[in-house]
Amino acid sequence: MDWGMKNRMSRIFKPETGRTVMLAIDHGYFLGPTGGLEEPAKTVEPLLPHADSLMLTRGVLRRCIPSSFSIPIVLRSSGGTSILTELSNEGLTVDMEDALRVNASAVTLSIFVGEEGERTTLLNLAKLVDAGEKYGVPVLAVTAVGKNMTRDARYLGLACRICAELGAHMVKTYYCEGFEEVVRNTPVPIVIAGGKKIEERAALELAYNAVNDGACGVDMGRNVFQSDCPEGMIRAIRAVVQDGASVDDAFGIYRDAKG
Ligand code: 5RP
Image: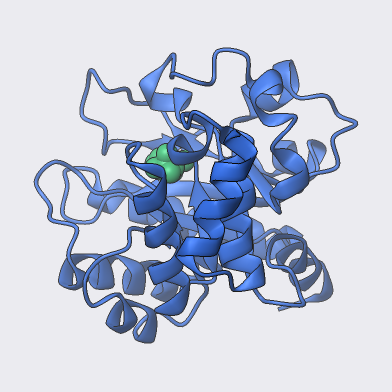
């Protein structure tokens, strides 16, 4: 890894811990309007002091996020499908030059192992890695799980390993039973998605179990911005990921913030 690539990685994963709290707000790229993201700047402004990086599309970045915000950007660079069509047929949507123009610290795309778009999305990953290596921009591969697949260690381990083999610099996947085995077989840092909104304590347990089983952090969205206290929730998640807090202590942070 050259200097630029290493520098960008260290903007995302805090060098003191090797971990990250990534806030995902890119849901609209295939879901359209998403609860909690009607006015993205209003949603994220109070959350950013507690996040290490922000994952979003270039449209929302350019139109909604003030350029004075200094948070490292993980730029969603795949799409082209919606919940109304075959989701897995994604293409690349951002040129690496434009990612550099918006000062992205990393780019990200989804891959769909076992789905109709498997070959296309894996080749997208290879292309994005080529461009990333050329300019020193790391690639975060998201192991999207289509409706025909099960989120178990066998499937997620397969998808994560393929991402790493194709050159992804980091992988985002789901937490599952046997997650340590997924981590052991994936020679790049893994962050976990939160998934659909669940009860706050359960979301904190998810983050706690993931980092204890070897994840290098979280890339969570709905369990933060759809919480009844988003700021309390991201502070609690940060305590788990970056400060090694227990679930009880983290839940206390959320509860106190909620008042
Ligand atoms: C979709 C994504 C989303 O950013 C991610 O899944 C959002 O996080 P969460 O599931 O925690 O809302 O990558 O492919």
